[in-house]
Image 1 (cartoon, helix red, strand yellow):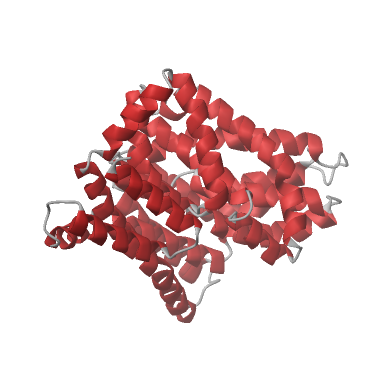
Image 2: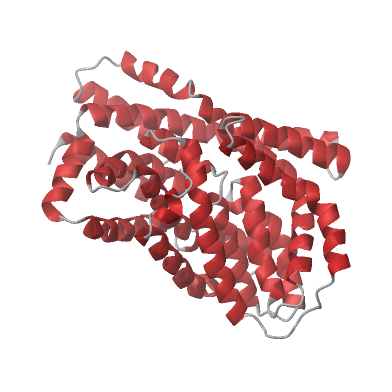
Length: 419
């Protein structure tokens, strides 16, 4: 077995055994350069500077900060009110409103746990009051919360773009179609699974009232994504616009967040992202080492000897990523696997942007699978229900998500039609 393959195996095993990722990345990069490569150790310092110098990195803390500000304010409640009034009169309308609220908030926050916390904490008691079972309510909200990483802007998409060397703007564009597909299949399931009692009648005056109060919340994703896709500003600039917009709306217009509350939000965001940045810049160094050792080409040659068709590769990689999603968090999985699997996908004629979407949807499902599924633990905490009950609740939704994954994988045009 080659040195490169041994490095990958050591990396994956270290993560599965629960070692801190920044320790793993730093240690492996150092050992590799000391024992294998002819390069000087100073190369690692240069790699760290190269990684930290990427402008797109600034988008991560800015999008997280915007999401944190909105979670403290009333944007999520206003979005829910618009969705509820729009679906009133439809059997199961409250369930549909839950999925739609998650989808719209996901287009603002870029984070699945933040989406689940913001929407789930408000919609869960409303669903129970409307006659939904605990199981259906928990399953819908836990799954709807995962939309935060596939509907742009998305932090995992930014990480994938950095590690795979693709355009983050193209990934954002590619996420819209798959996001719509997942919303449709989830809403379809909720329509048939929800109680058939008509919870309330549609009122145009009520809808217009909530639309007027929620218009500033609804405009946020339009401004962010419209600015990116029109070329008016970059992904990083859009993240800065999101922060400024969130502060103006929540502090000065809605007045739901006082200036004093902003300081703890800044502090929480800095703590959350300090470790991520350290991991990311060390991962870039390790990735450069694997490229020097021609590991991606070795993996392509090895895979080609075992699988000869594009369909065979897609089936194999989907199975692999679903398994990986059970045991690795999404950031770790992207940092480790994106630089390895993307060249293999290109070899089989798969567009790297489409492959990025496939990878992210697979790992999105990992948010709902034990033992590492983050949304399971978040849901258990905010709903105050045993973890085992949450796991049982999401099982039917896992099959719905797998259907969505199959559609997205089989029809690349869904991801690429805007490019």
